[in-house]
Length: 180
Image (cartoon, helix red, strand yellow):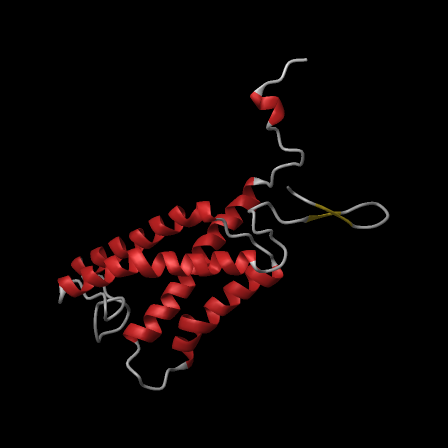
């Protein structure tokens, strides 16, 4: 009998398709990203006036719909190993906000050219840099951890990180099969 590392470590169940894995990764960006946008907009950028429909949808309802779809309807797992993908996304957004400000691209209104008032790179660069560092080192990890915790606590994922159960369609009845 010959034992090799590859023979003992083969999964007993089929691996999810590349499209399923892509959906997991995109959700791991969208869910915590929407939480970051909601927290930062309402705490730093909102001017205190009565918000309009567009701002409520863009900075609240859309994020809640993403969370509900991923955590309740689609049961998309959020993995800790995907955090670095979200971190790269957050860094890319901050680089884009700098380029947007530097090249004066504009945000579609005639009032101002900044994406968000608190990220005014042409004005107070030190304030924008300080906020960016705090967001990358504190807000982004906390928001990702919160979404990851909600994913684990949804009742269908074990705390040990094992995969969620899947439904196998049978000829006579549906049976559940663990993806351990």
